[in-house]
Image 1 (cartoon, rainbow, N blue to C red):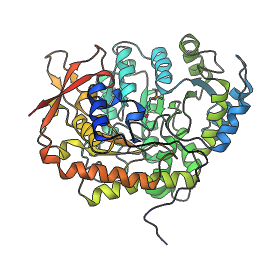
Image 2 (cartoon, helix red, strand yellow):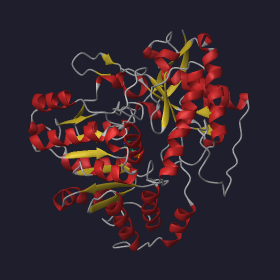
Image 3 (cartoon, rainbow, N blue to C red):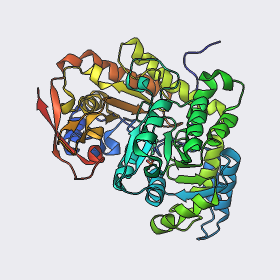
Image 4 (cartoon, helix red, strand yellow):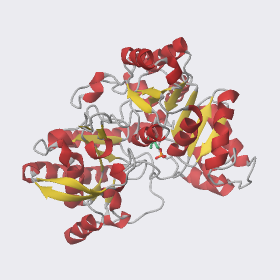
Length: 464
Ligand SMILES: *Cc1c(COP(=O)(O)O)cnc(C)c1O
């Protein structure tokens, strides 16, 4: 029997009560938070889909692992449990724990990238982009053109356009390109996967020019699951085998363990060679902690080791992807425009198509976020002009991003399918009254930090 709803492959052992704040409380919360959803408190929110980062529920085995945590400063048994899990699941010999993904980026880029460098990418995630700017370098987007067309179906919209990659290398020169990086799945482009065939092509280019290939592997298990279901050549492989094959393409990876590895805090840098390991390690000691804990408690390392093993379980992955797809189906039936096909961890609503009457300079993705919160105390995040617009240094002109998206990130093992129905109903109610949404947002305050606007901006409505 084909079921529309794939039932949860877990039962709930501990309950965290949540409630819907009333209308007046929601209005008050919006004002208090300066119309920036990052400014809301958790208790202001009923269903919190701001991010799937560190917000998942742990398994009973992970809670048990916490108790096994060895808090030794150097050489903790929990570090060796992590190292073993990395070797088994990902195949890397050298493991550097970090407190989260951006810490892995900080130590990696700080060690390997110099001012003026260029880093070819499919597309960098927002913190990754900000970290590249922070060391005076710039990313070069080389994702396939289909990534920029939200309505267009392509099974691997996160793929690197090999011609664009070659062109970037020829334009900037090998000496200015310390590494190539591929984000799997491509979060900023809608959680879209990268095929194994594409990763192997990128590997060939990396070999041809002698440039190391890094993966930003926060969502590597979901990426592997998509490969299994969409890439003909891999359909008989297990997710674990596919994941290993993807990792085999890379010289190193940076990981936010708060995503697929199923922990509330943690990150990793894994390298193939000792040489790369020792290049990065001094910065870890400087910014994170000693080599065998990297800013994490021993119990966190132990938990992460268990999470890495759980993330490739196929019943878990197939429910997760089906749950996101279920929310997508409900929205699709009502005509709500979003990035197709549905990606791994989130629905990315096309705010430009949802609110076409609001010019991009008034941040339609963020207006949509405010309205969805107003409607049902559901929190998502705007990923459009507020997050990604840049100023052209030569002309001073604002360069707007091609996509104006509002993301609903689904926390792992946390919400039920009936929560998804509530979210769909909330969005659909806003969609029905979209023509009456006649205001934009303006920035009243933002810190002078490139790429970090959207986290901290104070906004206020302006009627249009
Ligand atoms: C979340 C994420 C990061 C940053 O990781 P944090 O743990 O939030 O610091 C980097 N890259 C990708 C693709 C991510 O999804």
